[in-house]
Length: 363
Image 1: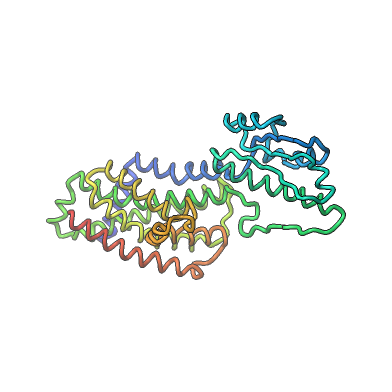
Image 2: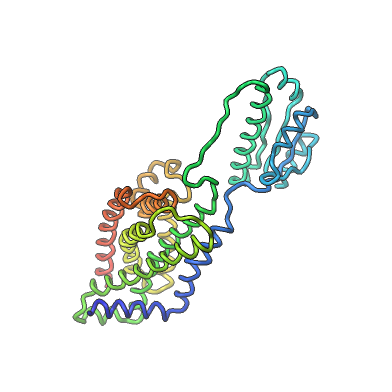
């Protein structure tokens, strides 16, 4: 009974905090929708020029193979100085350089080198531009070299996200980031608010143990995050953004519950060393950025320095991302992801124990 009364008090306290309530509703709705629909990681309307030293039918045909949806052809350049200028002024992402005797060498089956000059200042677009351009040039040259005969044709097949839509990845990536943010923020904020009001000192001399008090707060805030997660999954991601969900919602929520247990250990640590809400906000951002970086969501773990690859084992978000995306995009079951669950629970046990210890020591 005492547990339910305290739980109800935490829900009521959260609903009365209008600033936190509005921020939570915004993060689980509009923020995820904007990330899903407003951020596109594919190449679109990429400006480029061509320097044609051959002026032949095939050289013009090669340029015509760059589709307008992905590329925006701006014109031909006459010399190398113009290439430097358009790249220096950021007027183009890349320049296609076609050599002399291009058509003649194709017809005679001789070796060819077509240049793709890329503006490396825009690193994301330049990677995509060079990859798309290389594929188009390769397909064009292979087709003309082997005209009338047979040749090797590469046909990629994409599983789970057949259209390679960045909307799918961005929607779930933002949802997982928002869940992490609020699992760090809400329990710490609930405890620090009691500190600011002087209630923690009263609890120390009351019959209610401080551990029971903090456990109720952690459970209440975790339940709130799970409720908002379910609403975001059904309404924001599936209905509003039109992103499909291939697994079972209950599996996703159970995995999130295990993740909540792990992450709240970090939240207790934040609460133990914070004296006010400003410090909670600052420490939450600091820990969130570290957890995100080590999770592999920003950059593949394999491309990190060796020491960071080892430290990534301590990021609970790493296991949560692997499990959540497998359920949402690949349709895997929770049982198939039991290794991720075990890792979360082991890590959560250590973090929760450490967080409770620090909180009790500082109280």
